[in-house]
Length: 175
Image 1 (spheres, one colour):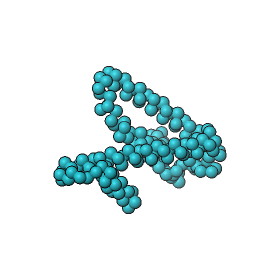
Image 2 (cartoon, one colour):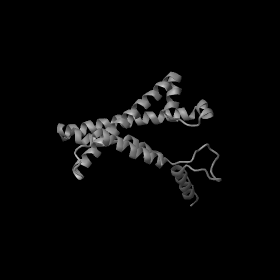
Image 3 (spheres, one colour):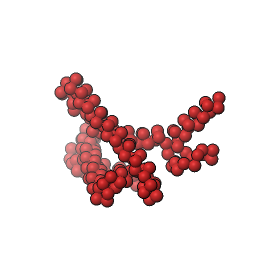
Image 4 (tube, helix red, strand yellow):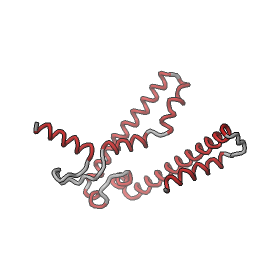
């Protein structure tokens, strides 16, 4: 029974990662593995990933499955490499003293130095800007098409729809 209680405590500790007075004094932060996994999955599965089966179906079932499995294998291997790099960066003494975390910038600073960190930050900025532009442009198209089909308004340009889309989601993010 004592072993079962220990397993339950370990299970609770693994999935909640919260400090209790009875637990060891390790430097864990509030959060959970499940929450971090969901955050990672949510960023990995974007609109492009969902569109892959639709776009590859013209090649046929077997080539599509092969291509999707190849993409999955590449994503899986790179996620394991990223995980290992994150563990290495978070366990280094230099990182624990200064920031206490191991994000992509910390990993690139550890592996490539300050120029690598600046390059990584620039590439992330470019990637996130491209994603915002793509979502805003497509959202504008959808709003323009929606107004045309539902309200029979023919003179709404997609650029106006993009402004409405960006304004709506910016107000949600702000408030």
